[in-house]
Length: 110
Image (cartoon, rainbow, N blue to C red; front, side):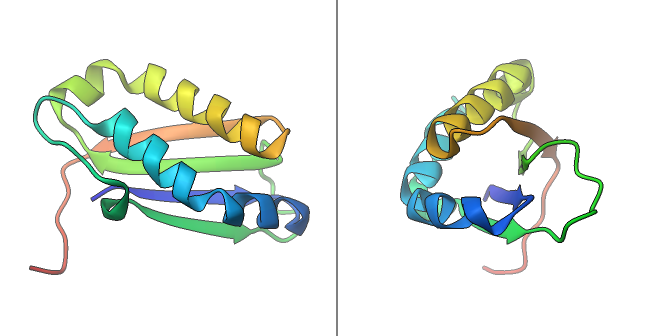
């Protein structure tokens, strides 16, 4: 199941991001749904992390999405990452840097 880590360079963004978690889950589930799998928002894990000053982040807000590397996702990976950054920018009114990491995944529950 996909994980989303959103890193905020200040605590000011945290309330808006926290309020948007349901919408973030919906956006990611829809963006990552493909011919191989249909995702629901309940299958997306979102974490919001406020980062200490001087951390060396390249953006005020950064986001990592990690999901399984289905072929359709790989073909659309740049578009998915750009759309997610744009979506988060509407939530925060701030520029966002986003990455999509597609990997072979295992999980620890059955």
